[in-house]
Length: 256
Image (cartoon, rainbow, N blue to C red):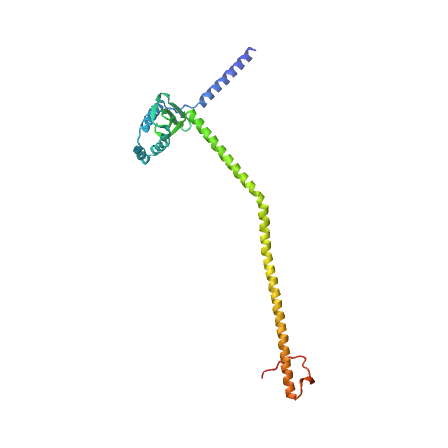
């Protein structure tokens, strides 16, 4: 029994050593550098103080400096400075720093107080302590935030009611659609009837013309018959009572 217990205890101690070695091997050493972080924090405070004291002409000049960080920083500050107003205090004692092990970036947030609202200057520094980006986050007071929320709510309600009124107006116009369709159908039917009436009128006029031509032909034949009968009677030396011309037919003679 004693030997069995010793073996079990030895096995447990061996497993414990293996787990401890595995845990130590899986732990990665942090790449965070205290000196770089301290330098980044000092640069962030100095940059914030310098930026808020720039004049309009200085900002315009820095915007065309050709340096990517400087141009982006000036654009961020120029978009927020009118809302913030004049500087009251830069709270360098309340700054905070975060380090991202994956991207190896130091994020330094410098709080500042202005006349109209508070803000945070959020700087990002690379592993060497050089600044890469700046964003100015405006923190509005609760009263301003509530006012903006109320305005957004009012605008949303106005838009919703405007859309509902427009839809109601469109729906009210639907009752006129059947009448419009019916009138359009009658108009189209009238347009199709006009050509039929026109063709009927043309056919009737054509029949009248043909009847008139036939009557004229009959009249012309009677006159021709009378003339021929008179010529025959004169040639025979008799009167027209002795014979009667019933028809006249043209004889086709060959031309020699």
